[in-house]
Length: 271
Ligand code: ARG
Image (cartoon, rainbow, N blue to C red; front, side):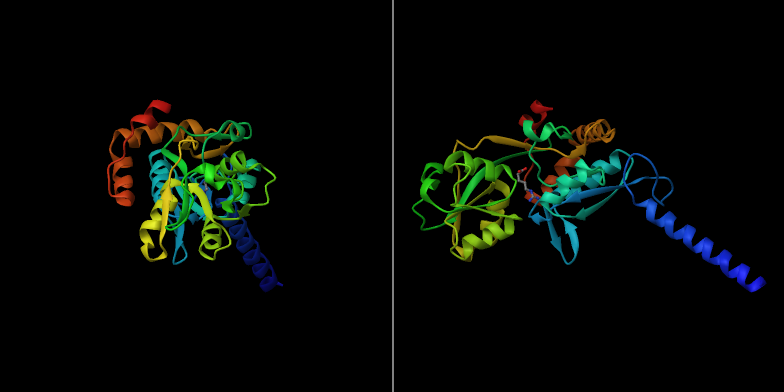
């Protein structure tokens, strides 16, 4: 009997620990991580958008990842970044199952209705990736061509504005790497996506003979960290982002990834 009691107690203790572990990683505005009171934030991303976020031997890495870890640290948190995919990350933030999302996410009015955003931290614009020998010279030339985009991005929106939302020549993919593969395989004539992503790809894969062209119809876009509506993290992260831009740490991370100093004039003007 004694033995049984002891066993039951051991089991209870074990279960208690299990549930404690379970909650230590849940998100929301309460609870703390197991490292001396620093709360661990669950941050979600779509790690198929190098150099901002991608997977390297099972790790999620990239400019955004180093950036968000530094911001979280500055704000007094640990950050655990998890690859969940593009569409799912919006579901998670809307449902408040994650604390924040970082994923080269453009701040725009439509998204602002459902989510909160930090101050801008990166300037971007959509550009066109095409084979070197392509007849496409401008956005206008895309009109009778097959264009691959990542579903649910500003790239898709920009192409829809040109070709019409219902146009069957717009091929939408769950991540941008799949859109690029479609172009490589000849199933599309062009990819429209954020400049830095396709420029890096073209630079790193010179043998594939692609080029990137720009067109002024594509507007300037600013990336922000995305939060559930009314998250208290927004104010804390805004402060931290501005601090990193002042103290040189943002520039250091930027330099690590892009090998040049950032020009913060336009970003700061938007803050
Ligand atoms: N900046 C674009 C947007 O917000 C594309 C972002 C895609 N990001 C990603 N990690 N796949 O719509």
